[in-house]
Image (cartoon, rainbow, N blue to C red; front, top):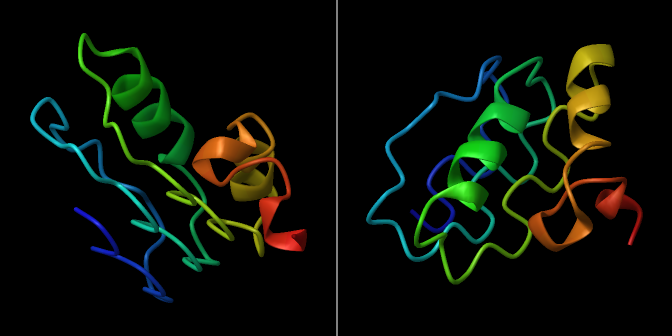
Amino acid sequence: MEEMFQACRSLITVPLLNTVRVTNMDNMFDSCWKVESGALALYQQASSQANPPSSHKYTFKNCGRDTTTGSAELAQIPTSWGGTLSWLS
């Protein structure tokens, strides 16, 4: 799922996808600036499953940064997944 939705400027809600067999989520939602919801739920699901994705660098980098609720969700996602103001680095 690497870069699957990267730079999708019209995405508003991150879908809650089945990630049980996913190994790579690198940059999956990177630069989806208008996302308002769903990023936190997908992060929580993927990171807590029995076998979380082994690669998840910048999965949510810049995701939702231009929205109030998206920014709030981004702040709750670890930088290793691309959250918490990782877009500044």
